[in-house]
Structure formats: C-alpha cells, structure tokens
Amino acid sequence: MIPGQFVYHRPSSVAEAVGLLASLGEEARPLAGGHSLIPMMKLRMASPEHLVDLGGLADLKGVREEAGSIVIGATTTQAELIKSDLLANRLPIIRETALLIADPQIRTKGTIGGNVANGDPGNDMPGVMQCLAADYVLTSPAGERVVAARDFYQGAYFTALEAGELLTALRVPVPPAGHGFAYEKLKRKVGDYATAAAAVILTMNGGTVATCSIALTNVAPTPLFAEAASRLVVGTSLDAATVKAAAEAAKAIADPATDGRGTAEYRREMAGVMVARALAKAESRAKGT
Amino acid sequence: MDMSEIDTIPVTVTVNGRKVQRFVEPRTLLIHFLREELNLTGAHIGCETSHCGACTVEIDGQSVKSCTMFAVQADGSAVTTVEGLANPDGTLHALQEGFRQMHGLQCGYCTPGMLMRAKVLLSENPDPTEAEIRHGIAGNLCRCTGYQNIVKAIQYAAAKLNGREFQEAAE
Ligand SMILES: Cc1cc2nc3c(=O)[nH]c(=O)nc-3n(C[C@H](O)[C@H](O)[C@H](O)COP(=O)(O)OP(=O)(O)OC[C@H]3O[C@@H](n4cnc5c(N)ncnc54)[C@H](O)[C@@H]3O)c2cc1C
Ligand code: FES
Ligand code: FES
Image 1 (spheres, each protein chain N blue to C red):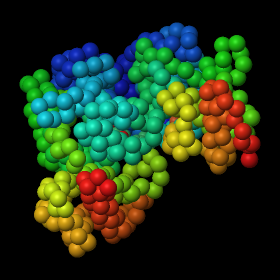
Image 2 (cartoon, rainbow over the protein chains, first blue to last red):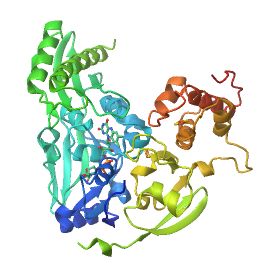
Image 3 (tube, helix red, strand yellow):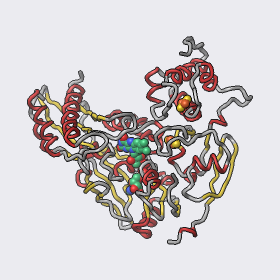
Image 4 (cartoon, each protein chain N blue to C red):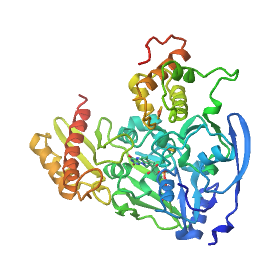
C-alpha cells in the first residue's frame, strides 16, 4: 500500500507554512505526525496534491503555562505529552488519555494538533478538550482566531478549520488543584478506537460536587459535550440515583453507528457505563481516596 | 496537476552509523527506502497498516513504525535498524542473546521489530517490570510465541545490561 503522489513542502516558519497553505488552497494539507493522514492516503481516502510538513517548525512544539492556562503547541507528540511534568501536575487527564491512544510507536509520531484537527470521531483528545473547555488557536496569513473546542466540530471530518488555516496551539484552562478527573475508554484491544469513552473533570466541596464537566468520544459523528449530564451532578453527593440520571442524560445525546465495535444500542449503553465509571473515578480522586 | 512532473528530492539519513543520501519520490515510505534503496531487509513489512510493528526501527532514540512515515520526514535523522543492533565487535546485543537463549522467536517475522522496540524500551526504562514490558511491546504483534518467551528474552537482556544473571528458564 503506497500513498498517491504529492509535492512535498517543508516550511521553516509558521508564516511560511500558512502562506503555502493559503496559496495552495484545498489541494494542500498539513502533515503533522502522519498517523491518521498516511493511512488515509494509502487507502485513497485522502489524495492531497501538496503536503506541508510541520516537522521543521520548532515554534509549534512544547507545553508552557501562561496566565492560568496551559498552552500546548500543535506538533507536541503524544509521547511528549506523556513525559511532561507540567501536564502531569496540572492536567493529569491529558496524560491518562494519551496513554490510551494507540501504542508506543504511534505515540512517538502522533501529535495533539493532528489528533484534534483531524475531525475523526474516534480520536480521543477532542472530547477531552471539550471536557476541559479548551480553545484552539487557528492561524492564517490574516492573523489568529480562537475557536472553542466545544464549537469546533461540525460532523465527521468537518470542522471549523478553513482551507489555508493551521491549528497552531491549544489553550487549556487549568482546573483547580485537587480536582477529580478520569478518562474511561472501552476498547476491544490495544490500538483500537473507543467503542465508547467518557471524560470527566469535577471539583468537590466537602461531600458535594461544586463543578462538573462531562464529554463523550466516538458515540456520534462528533465528540459531545454532555451539558445536561454535567449540570445534573452539580450540588449532589454523586449518590447512585444521580449517577444513573447522568448516565441516562449522556445516553440521550449519543448517536452512535452500528459498526465492528458493536450495535448502536450497545455502544449507547456503553456511553452510559463509561460516564458512571468516570464519575466514580473522578470522585475518588477528588476526595484523595 | 500533472503528477508525472513530480521531482525526486534528496534525503540524507545516518543509517546504522553510516551517512547515506538518495533521491526519492516524496511518497516513498521509510520502510521501502530502507529495504529497496538501501537493501536493509531486516525491518519487515507485515500489515502495512500501522498495526503489527514488524517494520519498527529506531529514529533519534525513539521507536517508529517505518511503514507509516515518509522517508523525507526522516531527513537529517539517525536511523537504527536490526542490522545495526549487534555490538561493534560483532558479538550479539544482549537482546539478541536474550531472544536466542529464551526462545523468543519461532518464525522470526516479528523479531526485528520486537528487538528494535525492546532496545528503546530498555533505554527509557532499564529495569522494567513484566507489566511494563508487556505495555511497552503493545504495538508489536507476534503470531507464534504467545509473547511469554519474548517477555523473558527482554527480562534476560535487562538483567544482563544491569549486570545481573537472569534465572528463569525458557518455556
Ligand atoms: C493503528 C492506529 C491506532 C490509532 N489509535 C488511536 C486511538 O485510539 N485514539 C486516537 O485518538 N487516535 C488514534 N490513532 C490516530 C493517531 O493518534 C494520530 O496520530 C492522530 O489522530 C493524528 O495526529 P498526527 O499528528 O499523526 O496527524 P496527521 O496524520 O499528520 O494529520 C491528521 C489530519 O489533521 C490535519 N492536521 C494535522 N496537524 C494539523 C494542524 N496543526 N493544523 C491543521 N490541520 C492539521 C492533517 O492535514 C490531516 O488532515 C491511531 C492511529 C493508528 C495508525
Ligand atoms: S508493517 Fe508497519 S506496522 Fe505492520
Ligand atoms: S515469531 Fe513468528 S510472528 Fe513472532
């Protein structure tokens, strides 16, 4: 399996990269880690005439803290996310999620920018970014604009990204120290996309949930921020009835397809199970138990 | 666009310590560059779909699946394949010795990828637990061994590299 032909470009600055993308238009695509794009090119599900390799853009790499947010450069690899002490301390859900993506070799190459820009509902980071209320910084020759992860996804492989735009960074607000978190992913085997997965971030005040945010992966054409489910648990002690109601609210917005991972009915049910498990794990972490 | 006009471009890579340059089409995958341009057929092609890990090589100290990377992306890098694994004096690397002593292979198809993955695993985590070894080779499939002896082979190598003797026998 060999990808189709293309012209290769390796810009050395972000300005040069967005200039190329803007002038080449729809026929050009950025190449980040290539671990979604190259498989799609082998299958002729993608046949770009030009690839703009982001590998030479040192500015797009790295994790830093900036005014209450963590800023992650788009070409930071999943392996680098796992190794980042800053993320382990401030946003441990990102490390937990990265470890559930594919396998070590794929994590060497795969980038967070490619993972969230790709638009494949199977990707794990988009739901986590919706859970965290992250923003994406999109750069074009006209300048920068910011789109919330919760507004970015329009359909399978359809996003707010315009031709000629590059996703250059993710800005993630830092949840309070001691927050509870969990990413629960049901998969058939290592390296599989989720049958269903749920992300939870919550804070507790005494025995009561003060804030909560829940999002779902791969149970609809886009990731889903489960707003009603999130709201429902705030002010409760996460008693069994509340957890059940939150799982039901999440299932109500899920719209999975029947595929090799199971029937639509089964996958919707599993979305509820993942929400319940993620809430339980996040609660026990918030309580330090 | 007339694709027949696409030029080959130069790729310079240090492979197993030797600097090489070739002109290739941009779409040339690293595995084909290694096997067909450089005649290094140690890295195998199993699935071509980024799943099996038979094509695993080391690039700048990290493991990659060379079927899912263009050769041009490796420009300027140092690549090590299984051909470059043995010690400079020609004796077997501790991992190769481990696979031999512990019967870590049957047909051998997955072995070059397993060896190269295990090399990076031990460089990052010189004394891994059994669970860490199993997670570390999660991207490498073996149809023959059931993994048991591959894990032991890696434990053997870790022990040897840490100056210990590995006790357990092969199954
Ligand atoms: C066997 C296998 C299993 C996998 N399992 C999982 C899994 O369980 N969960 C998961 O989330 N992922 C999984 N992946 C996908 C992997 O995480 C990819 O690396 C990731 O989805 C894409 O990142 P990339 O850097 O490789 O992007 P690329 O493949 O280079 O790009 C993907 C798409 O995004 C565009 N793009 C890339 N970067 C940018 C940018 N900065 N701005 C704008 N557009 C951009 C590209 O043009 C392309 O259209 C798997 C992949 C494989 C091969
Ligand atoms: S041939 Fe590359 S992963 Fe199977
Ligand atoms: S020894 Fe045959 S595939 Fe592993």
